[in-house]
Image (cartoon, rainbow, N blue to C red):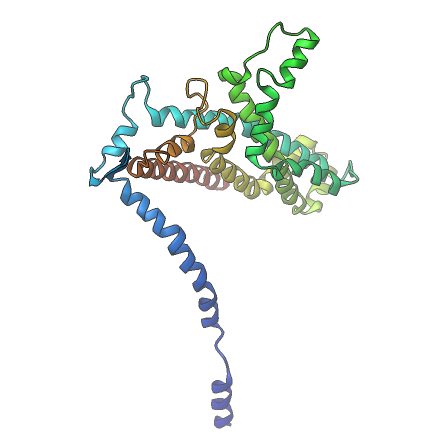
Length: 312
């Protein structure tokens, strides 16, 4: 009996180690391509390291001078980091607010058992299609449509609505509105599908019980749908916020990298990209990257804490 137990122990295979072996490639790739560049970026942020013509200046340790320069008033009379952070926040809000509102309404509309909408797969495909278009192509399309010689101006002139072409790409309000509109069109479909999946995961018996108790649609939404949908909504909100902080391609292409007018559409990533151009200023670029990481971490923490406090 004891011999058979010993044989079974010897023949038994421990599969626990294979789990660690399988995840080793992930950690190797993560350390080489993510962790090491992140640490190198933080390291470079404390150095003066840039190109001046054909000469390479540095690397010379300067401490926090790069960070200080980001919060120093420049020749134009504003603090770059604060100005471009506000620009990024405004552009994100312009696109995100209608995105969440429309996506939530569509999600409720398509998942309603009362309406029982037919052809949901077709509508899902249609509303998701703009998300498949490259942001740069989207921006080029809007650049062509709203330029001074574009079809929008020509159509308005032909209708007699205006006497001469409007410089849509030279006005702060219209440029920011176009950027927000493009971000809305590209992402509301993706948000709608995620919210639909979240709503469909809620037990239908809860809705039926609420209706039998005489609850209105508004009461059902705020007391059942939204609380149970909150994990999905927070995920969508945080990913959208991170995407907004990293906004680059749409304003870059639409304004030809100039952030016109008067840098009112220059985002944080566009500002970061300026240091990685001809000057190759790795010190300042590293400082901007570190601040971007800190801003993202703080905002994400605020969202998580607010949700956790609301659940108590």
